[in-house]
Image 1 (cartoon, rainbow, N blue to C red):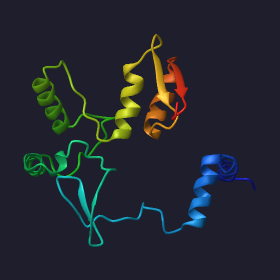
Image 2 (image 1 turned 30 degrees about the vertical axis):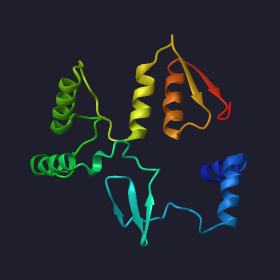
Image 3 (image 1 turned 180 degrees about the vertical axis):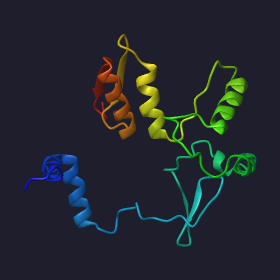
Image 4 (image 1 turned 90 degrees about the horizontal axis):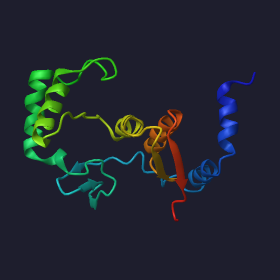
Length: 169
């Protein structure tokens, strides 16, 4: 029986990028970094791995606020008030902690409103189609992060014109 996953696997096997990564994995099985474990992290993007000090250029903490003592103290205070998880997705309801944080950020920025996305992926998938309309043109690097590509797909489905350019052009 031909299962949908088998058809998907055959389709993916035709993709040059997929074949490249499969070949890399076969030839260099120890080079994949997904299993890499950080032993320590500091405020300057320095990380400790197996006794070595390295600079993490792949950090998602773009501003380094995860290591700021004021942010850490606010998080601890927040866990006492709100607990350690939201209990619902923002897709279904607003959580008081998010509503309060967004109101404070909007006031601080002097803006009408603010929305906080819990991840870069959700920000790109939410913001890109939300910020552009049929009259707009989105120009995107062919190698932009997958979440950007997904956000652009949603925008295109809403009638937005999209142009992709070669990464090295």
